[in-house]
Image: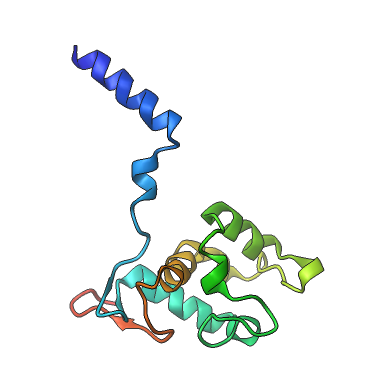
Length: 133
């Protein structure tokens, strides 16, 4: 009987694309601006790559689109592809040669997804107390 439950669980996971894992947030935030070390690294990567030049200091868009709006529908896989390969037709440069960005794509996604979800309520974040940085 236990074996049957295992196969059922595996089938459900495959059929739903691992839906329960998608509910897991890639960031942790307290008080709207205190974040875990990974998300803090994402913020630092954002700053180091000067993404604000095109997407605005608050990620609400400038010459480039609002990332707060874009990450509501953009999958993580598509986010990685856009950052890595760019969108030359829309003026988005490729960051594939930027080692800092490429090494910290998960962290950058976590930071921007937190902003898009509204969990991170201001662009400038700080480390969570006791979480290190």
